[in-house]
Image (cartoon, rainbow, N blue to C red; front, side, top):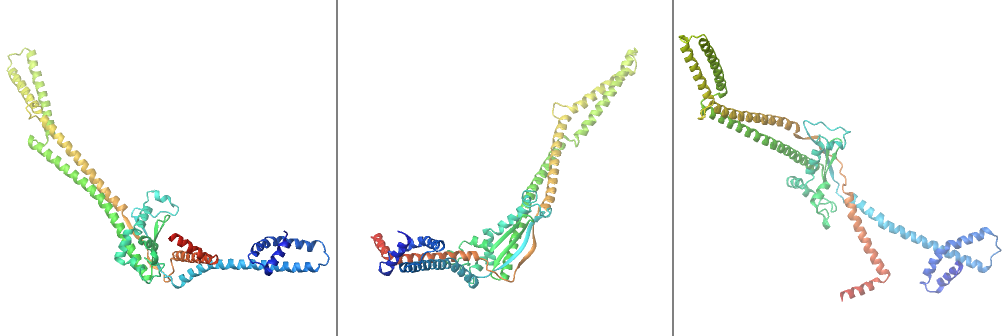
Length: 450
């Protein structure tokens, strides 16, 4: 069946036959219209035909009517497509814009700039970038710590307790879609909502933080922002003081232990001195050794003189008994002094000296440890002063005069979801109505109920 036969059949069906048979014919005509039109243009441009007969004129008229019907159907399809696009795209966007312009609550935004640094640190250079995180400079690390504290749940609870921060956004003055604990369970998570209204941006290159706080009025934005800055500053000071106190306390305990050890060794040395009756056994032992050396020299001189007399045969010399008594006396003195140095009975100067040297050595060790801990404590004081954290407000909290709608995305998402749900319901109802699906749906429902 060629295109002309299909068109004739369609026209005959259109004049008095069933309309249902015309639908597939329309599809065939739509598919073959291009081929038929091309063939006719080729016939008109190619060869010059004779004058058409009357039946050919009628067929040409019917063909033009079929072409017009096809064009009308295509135009109808385009209008339907445009209407759907308007319904699916333009209408939701229009609803979002209307809500943002008429119902959404504009919010003021306060802004402040601050940093956390130590007195011994300098601001990182702009070329440092991310490499400043891993270096000795701890400004970036302290900045992120301050950011995490500001965005934490304890900070949220503190702001609610002191300033009523969350209650400020739960008021009915806020529109339903941006209100805290809004309808249909929207914005029900307090921490997520808190982080929507409070933001902290960290500039890694400069080592500074920017705090953004939103509120319904300019005064509230500034008040909330100053509260956050004050709480963050207090937290940084407490954190720095705690580190300093822990370090100083540990070093102070070491110094006190060293002082007690020095006191104990001093008491032990004093006990040795009191028990032996000698304040300086070292000096006493040195004097004894010196005395023994002198006595030995005198003994050697006396023995030399005595031996000289005996060698000369002066056995009857009156000097000989005196020299003999002198040598015996010197030997007795030397033995006595050596007995002072080493006495097996327990009262020797050597044992006294050993006890004294042990006590004195322990005292010197304790004093050296005490001096070392004292120096460490002094250095720790200087280091703590250099590394103490300071909360520096570079730019104070301020808010602009013009409020803006801050939650366009948060408004658009629920509106689009709601519009999509309405469209789905309308589409299902329309399909069921066109295809007689209500009866089928009711029959299926009865079967399931049975």
